[in-house]
Image (tube, rainbow over all chains, first blue to last red; front, side):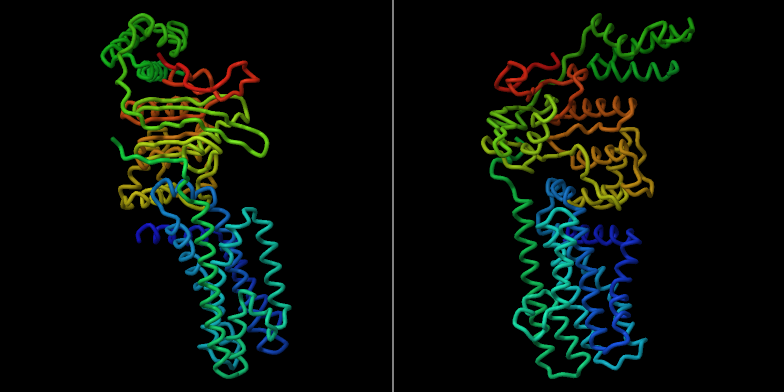
Length: 230
Length: 281
């Protein structure tokens, strides 16, 4: 447990020291919200949620890429793969929750009439999905540029795809969009339950994907035999 | 270099060359007395400290080193290919507790690959490695976190071994001091100079008290003083029973090691089947 917490803490410390990144993390969802402000409120809130998701995914992608060279030596120092990826995920979720707070308050200050419980749930879903999503891309694509381009593609698809179509359910942030509809448009409970279920399933699948990639990359190699000190 | 520095370097050289402690003290005291009474620049009176230490060793010999202990690392028949290119063919190395092995060879001959295979960070196409005890690894570069402080690196490594924060920090600072570096500041790793960053890298690899220590040219960016401290520290670790493998291209240090593994391919040297070569007698 101590190892897990230490990795989470160091991830948090690293991200908090990147002041420029933090500023951009806050700026991105804010821009998304403001750019749609004159239009329909639902669009504005959906854009905000997508911005939060994108910002946290990007932070996760960069944190994963930056840790690539450090992790093998941490493995030699006594960490097991799950300490490393779960610790990092915990740290990223914490950062995501922290940056979500002002975006929970923003529509409130803006005087938006919506279900704030739903907004909280949608933000939680965005952050929950975004951390393992960015980590998985970072684990699969070792270069930041490729990873960023893939993230950009996914978010663009998410933004442009018809949410009612069946293909939309395959996009990672569909959950927060569904919950946002319930939040803003006062639709039936089905939107909320579908969204929550989607969020939980996608988070679990992405976390499993991260676990699988990390376990392969940081596995104990078969050619190496460890004997106790004789 | 003033007389004190010269005497300090001479002391380190004599220690490095395993001159018996009493004899080394006697030699240094005699040289100090001579300089104090006769005056003059030690470089003119005695010459470079390394050369003088060499002359002392020739004259009075060295103390027998501790007998090498049990085998700590055995790499046998290591072969590695990248596509059609074979970078390692049947490389073999055995290192015992209390020995230093140097892995040498031309650029691109697979020195770092060999070390990464020994560390279990990469799989070979053939061959196996047996390690007794805990493994420490210091990469050529990287391996640190840009936005963390040195103390936080020590805490991170310490937590892997179940060491509490305070003791991990203290152990890290003490190990860094052996390299002439006071590590307790609030400078992030990205702001450290290249040489200091390598000191952090090296300190991290020794922090878990490994039984087998694998070092991939860890002295990049070191100044002369740190470089001397580095070899002193390796000697101390060797004397404490650590088995050390160091990748190096600095052939002038080979008299300080026990084993040399030359990975230069046969077609470049006319010599085949890399294996154990004699190093320090």
